[in-house]
Every structure is written in C-alpha cells, then in structure tokens.
Length: 109
Length: 116
Image (cartoon, rainbow over all chains, first blue to last red; front, side, top):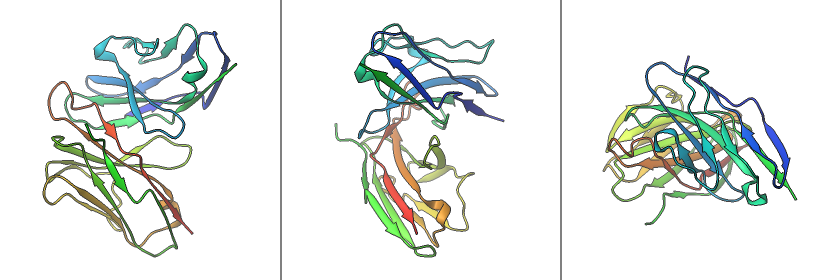
C-alpha cells in the first residue's frame, strides 16, 4: 500500500535548537517526495521537493531510498518556523499526492 | 498571479442536506484537484481533473459526492445527502501540466464544512 507516515503529531523545541521532522514512505515505482507547510491562518503551500535539492528557509531534506525516509531538517529553529508540516509522495507526472498526517512544529522563545 | 479561489469559506448544514463548493484554479493550470481534510489528518485526494476530464476519482464516495469541471476551468464539488462524517475542510488545488510542475500543487484557502 502506498502510504506516508509522520510519527510525531507534535514537535516542540526552543528557538535556536536543531529540528528534524520525520517522514517515512511506502511507495511502488519512482517516488517524488515533498514537504508542504501550513502557517497559522495561511494556505497549504509547497516548502521543498527532493528533486530540487535546495534549501528553503534554512530547511533541507534528503531522500534516503534505502530507509524510505525523507526527513526535514533545520540546524537552528526560529519562532516563525512554527507551523504544520506535511510530507507527501507522488509519482512522475501524475500530480496525485499522498499526504502524511502532519506534524505540528512549535518553536518556543 | 491570482491564487486558487474557493467559496464558500464556511458552511454549516444538517445531515441529509446538500452542499456545493466552487473552485477557480490558477489561470493556465490544466489540472485541478479536490482534497478532503478531516481534522487531525492529512489531505486525501477525492478527485483529479485534467482539463474537463476525470483522471482519478477512485476515492470519491460516488453515492453522495459528485464533481464537475465542464469547461475545463472552474469546478464544483457537491455532496448530497451529507453525513456527519463529511465534516471536513475541502481543499481545491491546481497544478501546471508538464514534467517540471505536475506535482507542484497550489492550494486554495479551503471550504470548511460542518454537518450537524
């Protein structure tokens, strides 16, 4: 079955601490992995995708096909990073995404 | 560019009543999606359109849900009759068709449905 698992519902850290939001996936074929973010009172929006291999707002994520993981990392969390983060998996050009249940990141001052 | 527009933003109905949601995607985006997001869960795809044709509706409860995109632009999602478990946020998204953008979805603000 195709599935995305985000094991933590809530991750709470202090400002300046490192952050790692976990994502594991189960997918047949060649998956494309994404992180979407929803800030308070804002729309769900793309944060980053694995094929871009870029850092957005200090966040990076590396696709580990062996462990079927795509964890999101940031070395020093900021208060403005507080939001709901969703990991998603898709394939090729279908456009169909399967989302995880989301992790709330709370960055305390 | 203008974003994905959805209406209404909020709707409260009683069970067995009907409701319709409207979505206008980003201009030029051929692919349109309706997702259902129940509280505490991630979005779940209900239906995907490519222009005015259905690409995937495998998770659409067809006994009560219907959707159309007659002219390949706007789309309407209808629920009739509604059940308590249909309480959720209904998200519309669109994407550019092409190898570089097919999986990059732009979401609307959502329509929050409460069924009493």
